[in-house]
Image (cartoon, rainbow, N blue to C red; front, side, top):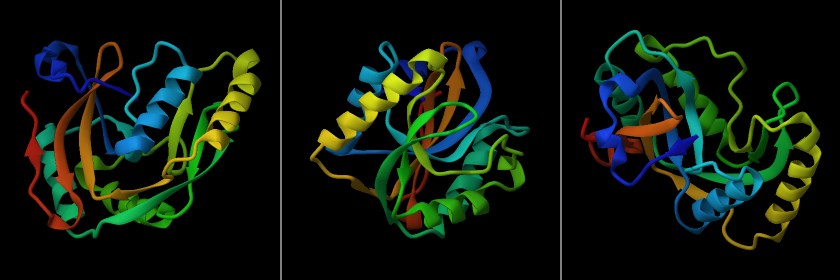
Length: 198
């Protein structure tokens, strides 16, 4: 999932915004920077913003502020928790290379189950599996080499492998696969939802 944190999102005209929304937890600090750099090495030219999806991409049948209200309601009841990154794996059907989630995976599944209802309900094509995407849509002949490089760079990384899941961002996709942050909400009702400019 690429993202634009430069303020460009506010300038994306409505006709370029797609009816595709997701709920993500961005990975902060040194770990997030490492994962962004790793993804750029694996998939040159991509514009990553490292995250774990609470709700994978989906269309909405309601206006996004209605769905964002549900996000706030559910997350207000959920205490912050820690997420620990595990090893690198590959989804067998899609050849997506990802980092699995160790600690915090059960919490992510519970939040996903609580959130995937009402205006946010969607029959996802795959069972929810918390992860951090590193590379996708790789030509089949490059999967093994990309996977080897990901394993080597992850093994060499000596920084933190844990982070606090205390905020989530409700995001919308646009033409060019640029994701727009629409609203941010804290877990546990630490603060109210903040809407980004339209």
